[in-house]
Length: 203
Image (cartoon, rainbow, N blue to C red):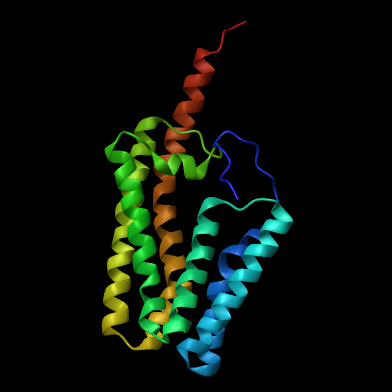
């Protein structure tokens, strides 16, 4: 399942398809945990529902975006390891590993003059290179902070607190952080549009 290039046409699908692929696994984990109060039981639900969501999403969309694919495969790998070794700490460290890896990927790309977040977002937004670099830096640091916060919470707080932090806590934090970036993105997008308009030949 290849990640299409940034300028490739995107296949549109119903919003519920993308939401199911992204959040079905974490939601199943949350529900199963509070129904059973057993993290291993919740992990079974996570693995099963994540696998079904990935397959269903691929069959419907004929492709899977990079980040949903990353989250889904991570849920399967860490979930299976948790069940094999019967060690809940493995699933708790999944967020730490994935967010830290993603943060380092973004910052590493920036260090060599690239903007990985531009590739992840594709052609959905037209921004200047300066703003892409700012977004790459900010999201890279944000993911590293999430990794650190996850470590603190699962090591110091009761298990049910960590479960809620994992979902929907991480989703809420990510949405709020993304919203804080919108003013900068909208201002730059308008400036880019104005520049293009001025560059057009006048009749």
